Image 1 (cartoon, rainbow, N blue to C red):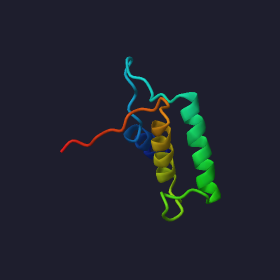
Image 2 (image 1 turned 45 degrees about the vertical axis):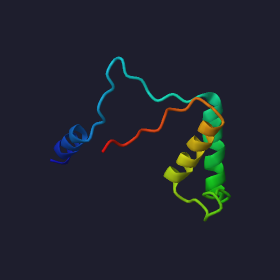
Image 3 (image 1 turned 90 degrees about the horizontal axis):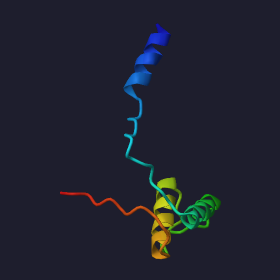
Image 4 (image 1 turned 180 degrees about the vertical axis):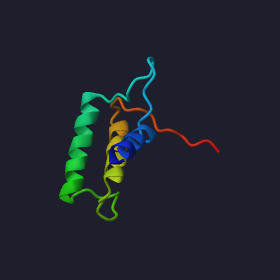
Length: 84
C-alpha cells in the first residue's frame, strides 16, 4: 500500500523532461563567482538591499547577485518579463 502511494506520488510530481534542443540556463564563470560571493555575504549577515535592512531570503540574495552581475556585463540570462 505504502509503496503504491510512493509510486503515484513520484509520477505526479516528476519534473518535466527537457526536450532535445532545450538547454539549461548558462552563466559565465565570473557570474557564478559573483553569485557565490554574494550568497556568502548574505548568509554571513553582511548583505543589505541598497541602504535598507539586511537580506535574509536566499531568493533575494540571488536576485541581487544576478543584477550586480548584469551591471558588470557578465553573461547572465535576461530577466523574464511578465506579459499582461
